[in-house]
Image 1 (spheres, rainbow, N blue to C red):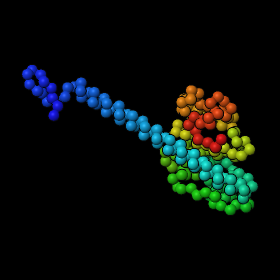
Image 2 (image 1 turned 30 degrees about the vertical axis):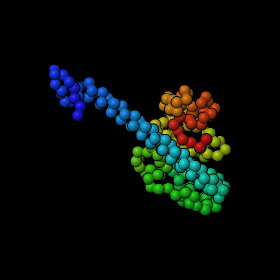
Image 3 (image 1 turned 90 degrees about the vertical axis):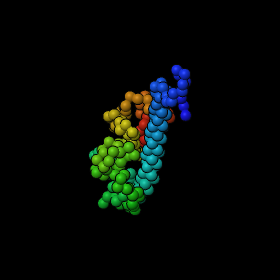
Length: 199
């Protein structure tokens, strides 16, 4: 039992300063724990997105071997609903189609048929989806581009022009902001800020 000696006798309890110090330590430890949990969650979602893109690449490769071309990106939005349709069901014009090359769970597809990334916020989310370009890829010009915008849902504008300005933050901590230009400074680490992609 704690206490202190004042005015000739022992008194039980803690001083206000002792209580504030204890509360401060608890708040700091809780903050560190929450930060580490958020970082671990983000790393897990990145790993999930990278694995999903690798699965898509394998399925696209099988589709191309059978059909003779890459799946179309003609849905007018992200391109991923056409990709999903081609890999899962095929199109009437797909001679040699021998799929399905990949099956998609309901939780992986939004209400428009686009493929959802790990940061999605429900079936109506059209921001956190995978983007697929085969007709006009910017990075893999002889094949196709697949990418997710990552946790912030931003890549800026001008996809076809290659203007990948993102969020003006150094997300990967390398001292270079938004290295989404494939030939620009910082691009050699292929992290490309928080976007996940196949280039």
